[in-house]
Length: 181
Image (cartoon, rainbow, N blue to C red; front, side, top):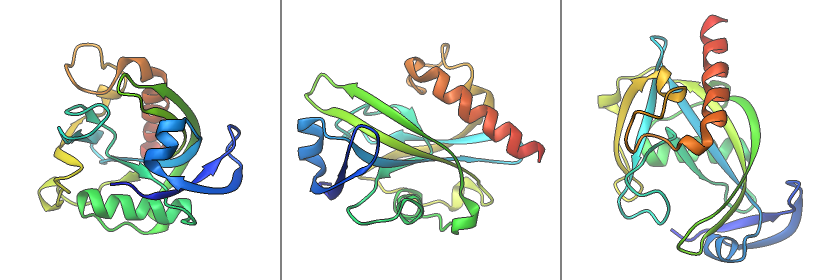
């Protein structure tokens, strides 16, 4: 879906301009997204299999939930909205633990230029996966994997992308820290 988003500077500051997501991707303009990684107390991570119709990384097992922040929308509101839209889970702001912001720059073969500031959260999944309702336009499937998949992606086909291994390891470490606290 094409939505209106805020355009940022490469440093992540607002420019005061908005554009359609498709325009931002065509022109390589920086914008903000949210990543929400859902984990369980027994060291599992919820991954979503991206819909086969997605323009980038179709059919890949990926972040629990991710999406763009709409123009004028707060980061936390976007995180809660995306979780509800994609998997039907209602979270409260205090369920979301921000673990960082990451600059992501990838030029895809199809012409999409992702220049994004990812606001990265973790949250405990407290309901059974069977109770979640996936948004078919965005998500092909959801499944719990052993948390170690974030550290060892090399032997798994279509599960995460090895080029982002350092990012996944950071998420793994933050989830382990949270589980120990």
